[in-house]
Image (cartoon, rainbow, N blue to C red):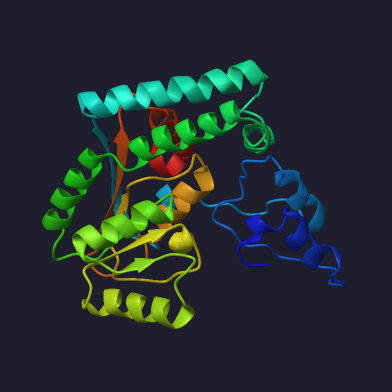
Length: 273
């Protein structure tokens, strides 16, 4: 099973449970899961028999790499809007007794917000504070500087949502790849990145895994989830070994927002220590 970290999910697990093969092998660079279902892998495939971390392979089997975390600030007006929206959203969560830290917490939040006008205001506030953190204008200014700095490199820009992805594509005139991009167009764009026709592409989650772009050596994370697996996969997109290659991953964070905590969670991996 390639990308074996998917197997604990209900649909993928069926493939293993219905298999008659007495011996099984699973391959993955990221066995850890946010939902804590790693034990399911032990049940349907078996225990981990060999593990090698990214840091021990860089320079030999993977490219050497650096990571840099860059914090940006909201403007006074943006800060006020952020704090007001967050207070509305958090106030609703606390009043409803919703525990967002649990696996079912956010699903419960979505359900509760659909039941009242107050809930709908809370959802709108959640989206506003999230967008202010994910796509702060200061991030785009830093991104412009990084794109200029790495004009001769091949870059993949990662976002958490399609709106930010398309906004970056329009502003910097680089191709966008989302779940809406047809397979043929996606292949054309990636071939263009490899050949140098495009200096960068921007994507929302689609290129997290299963993509081979050996010439890509710069990853810029404009926004993302708190998933350790996702963050390691994004780093992995620029680690394909090539002579003389040194990769770099930049992570852009909006200071004093919920994104700072999200960043700490997703960096909880030996690759970032």
